[in-house]
Each structure stands twice: as structure tokens, then as C-alpha cells.
Length: 317
Image 1 (cartoon, one colour):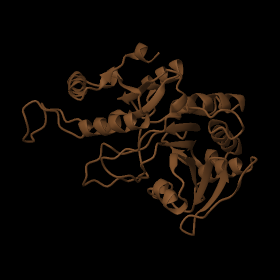
Image 2 (image 1 turned 30 degrees about the vertical axis):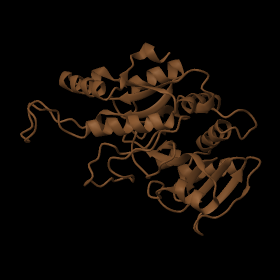
Image 3 (image 1 turned 135 degrees about the vertical axis):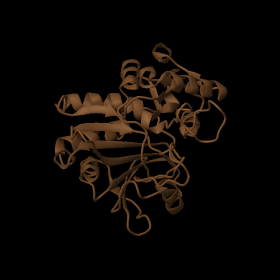
Image 4 (image 1 turned 90 degrees about the vertical axis):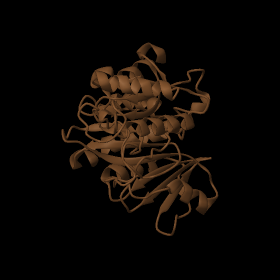
């Protein structure tokens, strides 16, 4: 079982951390993938470089397995982050576009109605990244945060993106690149210590947060995750829970039924979170204030129908 770290040469916030990581001890060249992707090997970690958009190269896990015979246990993508605010940031997030309908086109990779299993390291790595950023004097200039589930590429292994934002000035920052490289180095145990965020060593803390609602940077979910050292599953912000007000919709459907793709988004996100944390106890945490009353009622009813438990903040301790 190997960990696959993926970088693209066309993104400075991707190749910068990859180059910093490769400057650390123990790496040697590995096999090429399909003739045009180089790889590097260090213990049970494989770093793969390609020259395409980071969200367009689908199924790199299966492609690696087919080429090498090595089973991919997890995937970590290194990438840039963009934001309207242009604020410098170091971010981590799961991926998927479970809210899109089958006939819709995903503008940033992935397949409509799909979500990858979230990498179990997301929560523990957020805390590690916060510590690294502080020790390298990157904070408070850089915000360290989670993002909600979004974009591709399509992949089936437990996955997360680790990003530098939010403009070219910061994508090229060597201190930020070094911090991300150190996160991967320490987080995967390449420095000789234990890896960080290994679900198989959960020490009895087996509750996983499935975040529903809120903005893109999921502040209410972040409050719990940072405080209580919580395992993190998918994080669906309000824009990924598309709900049609039955009082305003003229579509022909059951009177009072709330339309939209929100049910499918929750179901897929719950199922893939369960798959990523075998034996874990997945609890939905709802950002109550981000929903209107009819939305909360519909979500709570659906969760009950699906036997998805709801956890208040204290339930994750």
C-alpha cells in the first residue's frame, strides 16, 4: 500500500512544494507513468509529476496501480487556491461535486453526483499545518483553514487537496512551499516518526464529522475540528446543498416536497465518508444558522430517513 502525492509542473503552488519535498533525504527516481509522468520514491510514498491541469487527470490511483502493481492507499494533491479576497492562505479539503446533476458539466473536473472518499488525515493535518505555519512565522499573514468539498479530478481512493492561496505572489512563496513540504514530510512519517492522521491508530476516537451547511470555509465546523481533535469527512457548504423552496416552485411534484439535489449530495458524501473510515461513527454536524427553518426541517427529516445520526458540538469530544 502506497501514498500517492501528485503535483503538476504548470502550477507554481504545486511544483514549489513538490520540489521542496524532493530536496529532503531519501528520494530516488521511480517508474514513469504512461511515458510522460515522472515519479519519485521514498519509503511507501510515491510523488508523481505531470504537465496537465491538476483537476483534469482522472483516476491516477488506478492508473498507477495498473502500471506498477502497487495498491494506492491514499492520494494527496498539491495545488493552488484562488479566492476573490486574494487573501494568503494554506488550505486543505476533500473533493467532489455531489450536488451537480448528471447532465451538468463540472467546470473544475470530477463527475456530477460523485465525491471521492475523504482522506482521514484531513483533520489531523489541519492541526499539524497550523503548528508548522506558526513555527515558520506564516501566521497571521496566511490563514490556515479547511475548505468545503469541491472540484475534481475523479478518483476513488481517499483523497485531499493541500493548497497555497490566493494569488500568484503567494503561489510562488518559498516559505509557504516549504511549509507544505514539511506537512507532507512529517504527516506521512518520512522523517522517521509516526505518520499523522492514520485512521488505523485512532485510539478509540472514532467519531467523524460530516459537515452540512455554512460558507466555503466552514467556520462552524472548523470551531469543532480545531477544538476537539475531530476526524473530518466531507464538508458540504450551502452552495452544495441545492434546495428548492416548495412554496415558490411551480414544478409538478409532491406538495410540500423540497426539490433540488441536496438529498443526493448528502447521501453520496455520507457513503464515501463511511467508506473512508471503516468502523467509524459518522455524525452529521449542521450549521444551524445557515439554513432557513424549512431547510433545516427537510434536512433533519432526510437524515432520520437515512439513519444518519446528528451530532451537536459536544458529541465529538
